[in-house]
Structure formats: C-alpha cells, structure tokens
Image (cartoon, rainbow, N blue to C red; front, side, top):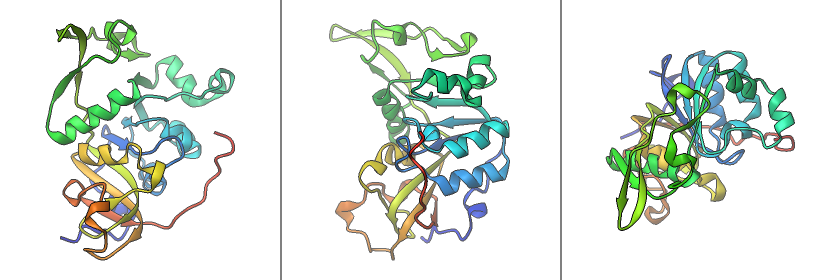
Length: 246
C-alpha cells in the first residue's frame, strides 16, 4: 500500500481545532520541522501539543509563532520550559503558562515515553513506582490548580505505585531519516528519541522522511517503526537550523 502524499497540505488533512498533536524530537534532534511549520500555516487553534523532551524549545521559531498566533491550549512535556529562569520569564510561552492562558502538564521522561508506548500496545493504563512519595504521587503536575487531580495508588510487591493512563494523541508528527512508501521508518541516532513511540500511539501518524526508498529497500532488521503504525509519508529535504541560542 502506497502511503506517500504529495504535499504538506495533504499530509495534515483532518487536523482541526482542538486536536491533540504529538510532536517528536529531543530538543533540536528529530523534530518534524516541516510538518510543524505546515501545522502553523494551517492555522488550527486550541491545540494540545504532546511532546517528549523539549522539541518546542528546540524549534524556537516555530514555538514563537504558535504562541503569537494563539494556537496552543495545552502542552504535555517532560521538559517544557527554558533552562534560564530569566530568559524564560521574558518569553511569551512561559508568560502565558504563568498566567494560565496555556496549560503545561509535566511527566517524568520515562513515564511519558511509556504512556505513548502503552497507547500503541492497546493498554489503557498501568501502575508504575516512579514518583511515589513525591509531588508526582500527590497530584498531576500542572500549572492549573483546577486540574491537579489526586492520583490513584496501589501497593504492589511492597512498593507504592501510581496509576498512569496511556497517552493516545489524535495525530503524531514524526521525523525519520529513511522510510518507504509502505510507512516503514528508520531513525538516525539521537533523532530516534520519542518518534518511534509516538508513531505507535496516535490515531493517525504522519511521517516526514528525508530519504524515501522503494518498498523493500530497508533492511527489515533496521526498521524502527513498522508501516502498520504509519498512515501518511511525506518526503522532505534535509534542512539546516540554528541551535546556538536554545
């Protein structure tokens, strides 16, 4: 089955206001920048952006535009704020979080990864000991007090565990170094990060691929995401970007 699309507009068809969209990337590595830029141009609003570890900080120009356009309602991330408190305090994104205009919900990185993986595996919830005895156990970590829900816990094998729910975005935008028309993907080094678990998790996964090879052109043992998880494939050029001022 040929899943390639000819334009970013075709790739992003069906994404509407209020959607939950996962964005792959670990800061600047493996961010689907061309799809993200097209999402901005599409103009959809009230978005929940589900991340892994700071891809919006790695794509600072795209973040600025999303915030300026008023397109974000909520961000889910493990590391969503600038490392410098002074720099963050001056940035519109953090200012809107502090004012409550944008919600920021934070999870430990490994827990967040597992929330995506569980969604892809069809497991709706799981118990995990990470965060037991800390603020993570007390309530969801969010800047909106009304959403700080009490967490359900259970003692398993003598350890207190916290109930976490799978995270299934409506759409996932992922970046792959290589892929084929059937949606099989291979990532490159650090750029793999959260892309492969996000590709599993979403209702619709859209992959931007630097190198599109014929079906059968990928060594089966080197495929990181099987094509069954991918609905659309867009070939994109390799782009350069500035990482000196993250």
